[in-house]
Image (cartoon, rainbow, N blue to C red):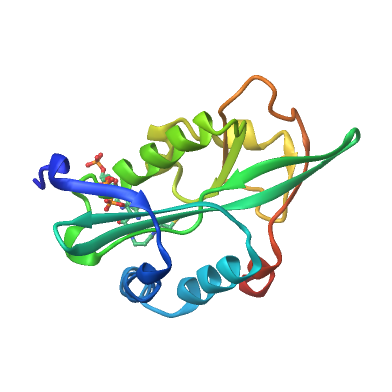
Length: 171
Ligand SMILES: CC(C)(COP(=O)(O)OP(=O)(O)OC[C@H]1O[C@@H](n2cnc3c(N)ncnc32)[C@H](O)[C@@H]1OP(=O)(O)O)[C@@H](O)C(=O)NCCC(=O)NCCS
């Protein structure tokens, strides 16, 4: 096991972009997520993005794009978790979990109330994400892998979830 105490997590800086792109491509086996993150950054769509270093090496990355929830009372804000990636040789040693927990804590501290993720319910369930919670919201991603986690009592109860434009080219 990797000693997670030896890992450091911090917000990404402009100088990290190249290494982040390489990590995403290695983790996902193609350029799609690298392009997605580049477009999200360029459009100012990221609420938060965290890098994880093991010594001098970038070993993990997570981005949190801004979402808009259209409700009968008007537009509200939420956040997505996408993408999350750990460099292949360091997967399954707690890095993805550490990044997810660090990001959720920062978002909660920053006043965010609602987070969505599309992924494996067994994995994301450990952080509190639930398919049942997401069912109250309309989304093109709705289904067995679309989950939500409320971080605050003032989270919108329902509405239509709108992802930023760079996600349009993925579907
Ligand atoms: C998915 C990913 C981010 C998880 O990060 P990680 O650091 O490897 O995972 P952690 O060490 O935090 O968690 C390990 C646990 O998650 C499980 N797990 C890891 N990857 C998983 C996956 N793709 N699907 C389901 N479960 C997964 C492991 O079985 C392990 O379970 P256990 O604790 O019961 O033994 C990482 O494996 C990765 O980058 N994968 C390729 C890119 C990807 O698929 N990203 C997610 C897109 S939604």
